[in-house]
Image (cartoon, rainbow, N blue to C red):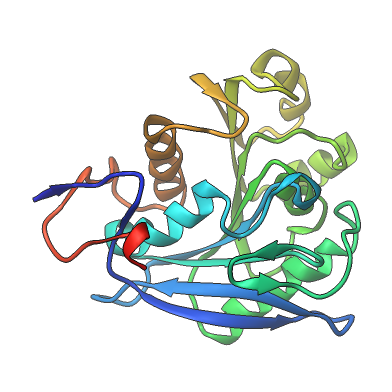
Amino acid sequence: MERIAANSVLPAIREPLTLRTADGLDLVGELALPEAAAPAATIVCVHPLPTHGGMMDSHLFRKAAWRLPALADLAVLRFNTRGTTSAAGTSQGQFDASTAEGLDLEAAVDLATDRGLPDIWLVGWSFGTDVVLRHGLLPEVTGAVLLSPPLRYAQDSDLDRWATDGRSVTVMIPEFDDFLPPAVAAPHFARVPQAEVIAVEGAKHLWVGEKYTSIVLDQIAAATGRPTPLPSDWDGPMSKWSDL
């Protein structure tokens, strides 16, 4: 058994993808699938603000793709929204403050649906939560996990639509969030009766540190119905990010 560390990459089937949006843009993406079994559920990851460095490789989503296929039998689809660059490449188009990014999200969900991937959950982080709240009530989507929602572009009216719809929402609020700490977030998310709001002691907006990565990945797995806590050790082949 080997301890899972910040740079541990567990086995998965990883496929680079190009997503095509309804307005004709090509987006860079990757799909990671379990090696040993068919996926039990699917997460579509929407990254933090690209004008401030957010991308599909932002650390929580990179680690989700590295770990969750093996530890939780989850399919992990991540992509660069329009105009966003990562090591995998640059998506076409320009940043649109969470408006046209709704077409990017729809393209990702369409791809997951076309591939026959089951039980699609949206996982938004920071800016990604605005995209999910504004555009995520798609017929194929089961529910959402929101990490550090700033409510910068999403409005209470978007929360009201989720409340009326009734789909599952899990909201993780860092204790020391720079934009929307728990006390400020509470009255907004109280508008969504089905929302599970989790204040994470000691965490900050970017969830830096292996302790907080583990908390987030555990909660994503739990929201999608997978057994938790996730293992912290791995008995099998494992590579390191530096080896890739």
